[in-house]
Image (cartoon, rainbow, N blue to C red; front, side, top):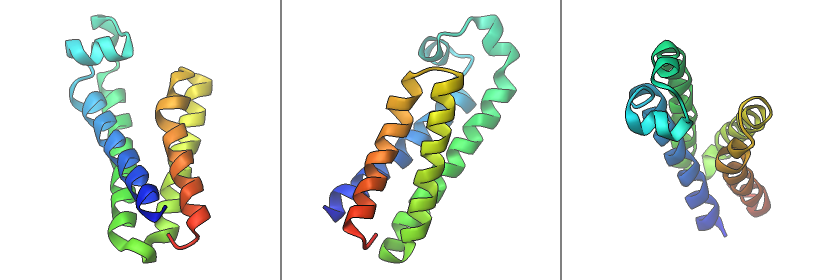
Length: 121
């Protein structure tokens, strides 16, 4: 179960790297606009805000990677950053799209529950 918890935590980190790329570099490109359902005008006008949001997603990914690199000694780091991801996902689901709950918060919640169950994160 430890391996599954670590793999899921790693998956959450990889997802946030993907979000970073989407928001920082692809926001106003056809793929980014299609992913987020944006018009070219809105994407251009909100590009710097999206890049800032992408940077924060990068920090979440970095924190999760740091916790994983620390292994068992990184228990509190992994838990903290997974909780941050869950809170951000719930907030995003409430304010932007319910889809965020399933794409962002649910994988983090599953990883967090597994980490807490194994008790030796």
